[in-house]
Image 1 (cartoon, helix red, strand yellow):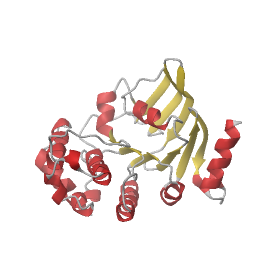
Image 2 (cartoon, one colour; image 1 turned 135 degrees about the vertical axis):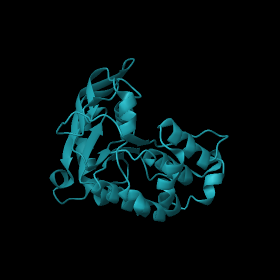
Image 3 (tube, one colour; image 1 turned 30 degrees about the horizontal axis):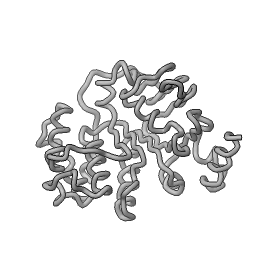
Length: 258
């Protein structure tokens, strides 16, 4: 697909040269009396597909929001390509494509208008940006839906539009929160193929999911978080040792809960 071959970082000043593309150092996040994240340290190289796994309420979405600069860490630091995720959040948003678990759109705009608005907000030439997305719009079966109000989309269609928005500025990093929720089997397969091609082109991808089989099929590395603490990180092979991921995940999370 021409779309994959055209992926590139937006024109911008060069970032500092660093070994890890994502660097999270001793990060804690507190909401009132609740400690949502506790001393999280995690580093990811460029071009790696990583899965962030954990029970509901473990802190996955909070960590993603910190990486996006939506929240500020109570303690510790987060950097993407050498840029502080909160202090340099305008620049970080140029580097990141974010897909939330439940995308929400303006009720009075069509899918086409939302893409046009997003392209303009990123400072892109709107015509060129949508032309670059056209192969993916077609692949996802979204051509006819572009003229309909996005608020009327099914959950799966909203996820597809959210993915288009995450990719519109051709970012080097994708952060995806439960990306396949609401997708049918065919769309999930398309998503897998797209993620692999993007990673082959150098895109770094981090996503959360409760579907262990998807992680086994797509990820080279994983991190497991429970009650705000990162309890295991490494390659899939290192952590599982040939055993099913679901079995290992349940064993690790239950052991740390005792």
